Image 1 (spheres, rainbow, N blue to C red):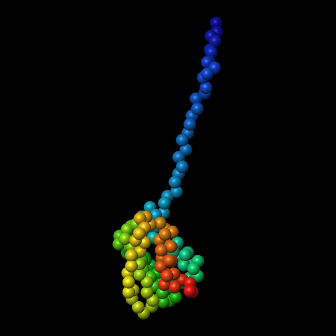
Image 2 (tube, rainbow, N blue to C red; image 1 turned 45 degrees about the horizontal axis):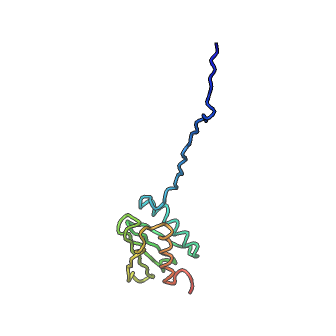
Image 3 (cartoon, rainbow, N blue to C red; image 1 turned 120 degrees about the vertical axis):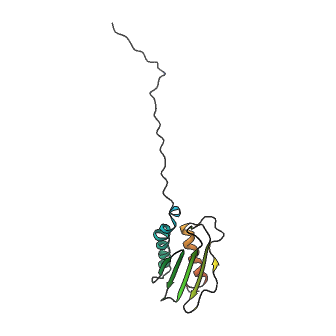
Length: 136
């Protein structure tokens, strides 16, 4: 005796849906402050200066400050961070050899979220306003 197995015509094989999650790239601005400054900001700033034709840039990170100079210390600038947070308060000053910074001004004050590109752009824009980067 054999049993006949019948399958309804409406039965479809079970479909398995696999949900593929997109892996987001880590955001460099989310790195710890010191790591962001050392591995992202300093190299990006150096590259921007090189693209502007300045090849003797010297950058030093000291506590919450970035000091920069070129042309044998003729041109100098400093970026100050109030705390170890790129989105926190920042200030900027620049001066020529033989003088001291006369003004320490807010830096990227109106920006809610600092990005690597914005922080590099801010320095380059400010120094260009001094007419230090290009002949005007």
